[in-house]
Amino acid sequence: MDKLTIRGGHQLNGKIRISGAKNSALKLMAAALLTDEPVELRNMPNLADSRFMARLLSTLGVDVYWPQGDSTCRLNAANISSTIAPYDLVRKMRATFNVLGPLLGRIGHATVSLPGGCAIGARPVNFHLDAFEAMGADIVIEQGYVKAAAIRGLNGAIIDLPFPSVGATEHTMMAATLAKGTTTINNAAREPEIIDIANMLKAMGAKIEGEGTSTIRIEGVDKLKGVSYSVMPDRIEAGTYAMAAAAAGGDVLLEGAPAAEMTSLLEHLRKAGVTATVEDNGVRIQRNGARLKAVDVDVQPHPGFATDLQAQFMALMTVADGTSTITENIFENRFLHAPELNRFGADIRVQGKVATVHGVDHLVGAPVMATDLRASVSLVIAGLVAEGETEVNRIYHLDRGFENLEEKLNACGARIERGADTE
Ligand code: UD1
Image (cartoon, rainbow, N blue to C red; front, side):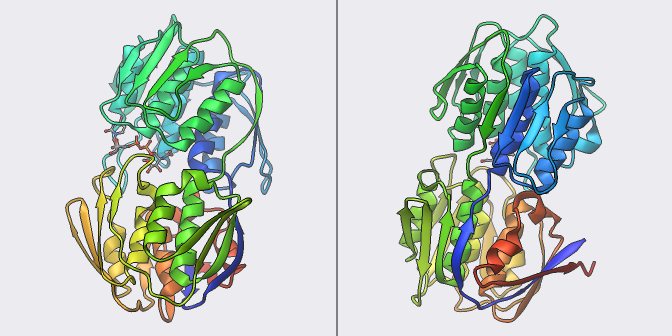
């Protein structure tokens, strides 16, 4: 396993090109199952997670052409040879569960392993299954597998989500494109990735309206066609580098960063004393000299502050002037990074869903352990500001979601090296 060794205390100056959005790309890949015509996805992030989804799709009989290093992935699901997504492939990455809806919509049945919990919480899939049942699917759970069947096809239905779940909104929307009649999703999630997926589905011939609002209506069609589509830029990657630059100081242009989808974060950064300027080709982040100010964060569904940026903001607040409180309202156990950040000399106390961060004047490098995808990058941010050397172990979490992380940061003056883990 690899580790990163970071020499802290260097400002970041230069440009970072933002990659395609992981969370969107994974669902767009699953959407290729909805048609027997070729699907071309451009601006694809080369990540462990997207490569993993490609592997699962191959197992289902999808013809995948995606050479290493290429940002275009070609998928052809003309001949689906299996409708079974095995445990080994689903347990490693939850988004693979999202092949269930497209298979059910197009083929009428699927057997997909339950994803199980993960480090940040239980993460059940009951909203997804309730929606498919409301659309007429028979669902049984046997030996850890969801067996779903809708032999005469899915029917449109009214789905009232108990919480605006991103995954359940996307999954239901995809399946509903091929259902008979109209599906209405109430209390839908409003994340930008949902708009991206709706845009691709519409380019394939789906009839969808209201994406990006709390009510989405999908009128089922008989067939979807192939498409060539470019994945939206990754607002979470862009936000992460914005916080890295804010923490280390300097002047970094985030090329291609989707400013309109980063409003809450940019407001919080400005309150903390960072200069965040929206430019024609991205977002510029500048901080010179002055110490950061403590700012409170209340994590909420979009357009609120994103849970996927919470750990990174906490890393930033460890060295701010004053005390900030960070409230996590989406996942029940998403503060695993707090004890690791304290190993750098930070002063963070967690009580339930609230973390109180008392700013300290400096951090000192330490050996730390990555626990989940976004948590691990918060440790990299802390390593960039800490005095001396930091070792981040178990970075396979990082490789799941950040394309060329150390190359991108090193090009701006960071000192990060990849090596073999000490474990
Ligand atoms: C997606 C993102 C993840 C992000 C999250 C919230 C992907 C691949 N992942 O995850 O990076 O942090 O949105 O923005 O896109 N819930 C249930 N039952 C369900 C579904 C969800 O109780 O059937 C709960 C979850 O446990 C959680 C909350 O709803 O507490 C929100 O989860 P959800 O929005 O579904 O997150 P994901 O789609 O899994």
